Amino acid sequence: MEDSLARPLSPAGLSCYVAISQFLGLTVIAMTGAWMGQFRGGIAWQSLLQFNVHPLCMIIGMVFLQGDALLVYRVFRNESKRSTKILHGLLHVLALVIALVGLIAVFDYHRKNNFADMYSLHSWCGISAFSLYFIQWLMGFSFFLFPGASFSLRSKYKSHHVFFGIFLFILSIATCLLGIKELLLFSIKTTYSSFVPEGILANVLGLLLITFGLLIGYILTRDEWKRPPLAEELALSMDFKNLTEGESPSGSQ
Ligand code: HEM
Image (cartoon, rainbow, N blue to C red; front, side, top):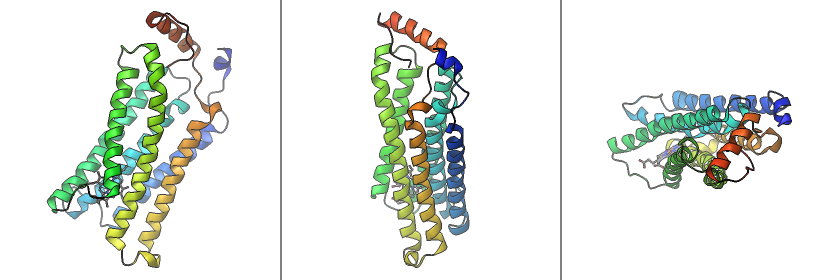
């Protein structure tokens, strides 16, 4: 308990890694915008440009915002657990809404142009990632934000929530890589092998997406950067556990 009171605002190294991850995330978004703007004619809801809304929204929602939502517990170390949980949930909602706009854009574009739906590995991984992400949000909300779940139920579910959270983030990045590859094959199939600028830009974008994922994964898995419970949270979790189970707690949820 004293440890948590005496801890520095942010452990050495963490701020630096978080700053690099944000720079990388914003670069990935800017590069996707540049790809769509410079090489694919721009972005619009009407006309053939409607497709271009898809990659941009998916990368903002399913990669950048999802990644940032995962970092919330490492970055906001001294705010109350409840406010941090709410911020975590809100960032995921924002990610889901922006990703939904991206999905509507691609389905609508396919419908208007009479293209087949859901035939590619990319689309299968994509629809699975989005649906599971939505389910994960609903489960997280019911267990952690909605009052009513007991202490031991929350504890049991927490490890599953963390596992699926990391899995969905990896699946989202992998889906983007498949999408990049597919778009390149549709748009520059005949010139791709001659190192054209669009191909190089998209390949670098793919590498930066992987690097962004690695950095977030690194920050999340460093034990010394995990958020230790605040003194009042330890006391509260003790009361909550005693009330719901009549046992002593082993950590806070
Ligand atoms: C996690 C992020 C993504 C998800 C969940 C996702 C999901 C989907 C889904 C469900 C479809 C099928 C639409 C239909 O059949 O009408 C689709 C199509 C497509 N997406 Fe994505 N996408 C993501 C990211 C990207 C990115 C980053 C790109 C390119 C840079 C991209 C390129 C494409 C292309 C070219 C198609 C049309 C061909 C196809 O149906 O496979 N996607 N996406």
